[in-house]
Image (spheres, helix red, strand yellow):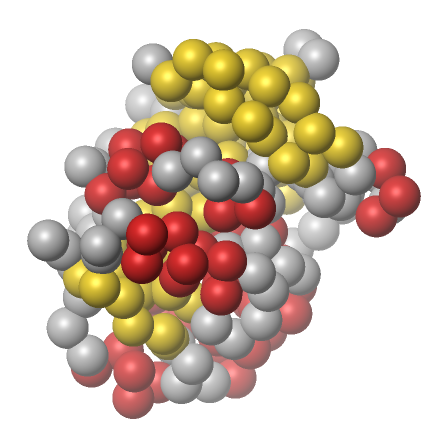
Length: 185
């Protein structure tokens, strides 16, 4: 089994760790530059506040190495704010890692009170429960990125080579199928 690193400077990292544990996957937390020297094979960028995460990864000396790992092909899964961190373009916000051929629309579904749940097909996964919290969506996508899911006419999940991104939070459900998809990448 692979070892996964979870960016743990801010956001919903503990929920991803619980999902990984349920799947029997070892994980480490990335909290500071020295953690980047630990051995891991894949990376999760959790939901939270993308601006804060981008700022902290720079201040903590992790940003350049994270970007290099992704660019060099390490599998990465970005949820919500993690999707924004991966996007090459961000409507209404700053570009951070900029490794995925997508444009993200920040807070596209409104404020915290605009949070909601829905169910749809994600790639080959039928009936996946999606939890949206101040969620972005993908406003544009170009090859080689591919659409995995849409909701209400908006792209809410995509994959490109070693990168998987969702606007919703699979870690906030009991359904492990998207984490399983990521672990097979």
